[in-house]
Image (cartoon, rainbow, N blue to C red; front, side, top):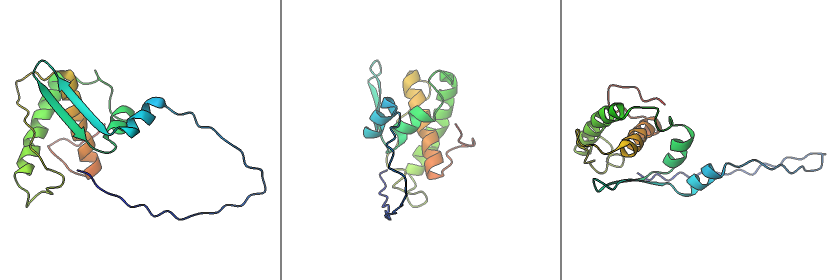
Length: 145
C-alpha cells in the first residue's frame, strides 16, 4: 500500500529588514520517533498471532489522533473488526471491482477467538485510518475518530 508522492518545491525568497531570529520548537520526542518508524507490529504471544502494518503515517496517526487505549470495550472492537475484516476480504477477492493496490492480502481474523485488546485496538484503528485516508467505506458505519 505504498504510494509515492512527488512534491514540487518552489523556492521562496523573503527579504526583511529585521535581523534573523532563531526559534526553537518544542519537539515531542514520541512523535519524532514514530515518524521514523512507520511499521506497527501487533503480537499476541498466547495465540501466536501477529499483524504487521506497514503504512506510512499510520503510527503517527495512531498516537496523535486515535482514541486512547481503553476508550472502546474489547467487545465493541471485536464486533467492528469482524464487519471490517469481512468486507476487506470480499474486496481482496474482487480485484476488478476494487483497487488491488489497496486490498492486497486477506486478513485471517476469526470472530470468537480472543486476540486480546491490543490486537483488536490497533486493527480497528487501522481500519479507521484506512477508510479516512483512502476515502473508502468498509461497512455501514461512517469512519470517525
